[in-house]
Image 1 (cartoon, rainbow, N blue to C red):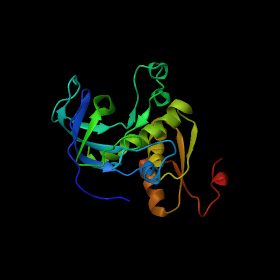
Image 2: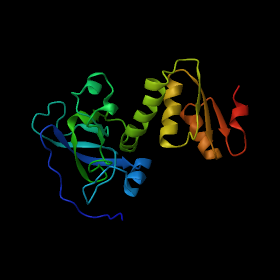
Image 3: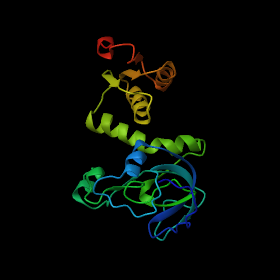
Length: 215
């Protein structure tokens, strides 16, 4: 059951920042969390949400990177910073890795207490809706294309389902890297959006065999 209601305002612990949330976004992860994830015992009532941006309202003890009034976005993956994987830049393999909104209470609320290490500064000119929806999908697409695939300029990149969050992030990242980007979607509006994001070729997968469209 999903219920919209009141919840006590959180207080930032040591190393945390209290964020006055201005915008957030839904992610497919929210659906999986609502259905229940094997091995995850959520504290109820649970607050969902992994993507958000807002203004720093207060900082906890030991926080020096941010101060009240700063614009920030949430990076949802929390790691210890000390284990072998974290020291080697593989934070997602951290022995205590967890995701805000999945394993612990999230940011779909008016205020959220977030570890300072999981906040990134947002320039004042960036819209809240953009800042609040970019974090998780762009991290996912970046890891896929840059960390794993190690894409290079001139290569061909095919993005299936390019109209979704991760899909349109992948199109933008591949385009920025100088790749030739092929994007698939199912409607003219979605194909147009993929082109706006930087796709060189768009393919309606319901009307065409995209494998034949790519040479």
